[in-house]
Figure 1 (cartoon, rainbow, N blue to C red):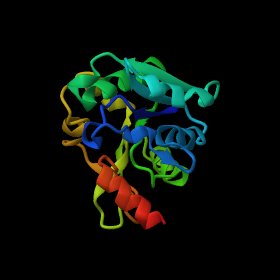
Figure 2: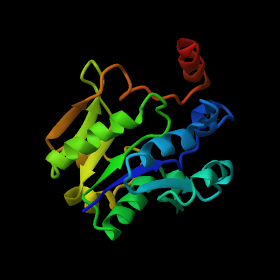
Figure 3: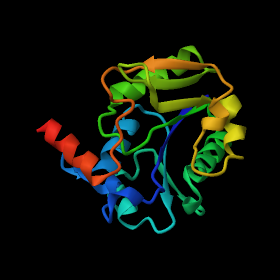
Length: 199
């Protein structure tokens, strides 16, 4: 059984005041493409969920065609984050995957080594929920749900993501250090602060 990776990219970037956080330029490429390439480097199946009117987001991924990347539209993306998770869980179950790693694409400090660390922990503990933590022990992303929980993802609704599925589970932490597991950039101010810190 193979582990699958999903990058949920069907959200509206509503806090960016007209900009699309997933198309922000990082290292000379759109953030969505950059993080997708990092996920693809693990050699695992990767899915990106997109809104129906994906436009520039879909175009940004064209150069990653024929690399094992799959893209699926989320017909009810406006209903919240759970819509992407439903699509991703269905994709993973269709392929009898051992689990699903959720990587939020608006977290630019997450690198391939971080993703690999979560995947390696899953290989040793295939039935556990795994969540990355920052240096202070706060849970963040990536989050990995084992195959036994995927049917529950299909029934999710709203914008809370997988919280209700994870809540009753004992979670195995995957320490990443720094704030890579918890730093997401979803406002212009957050982007400006991050870029200033990076120099």
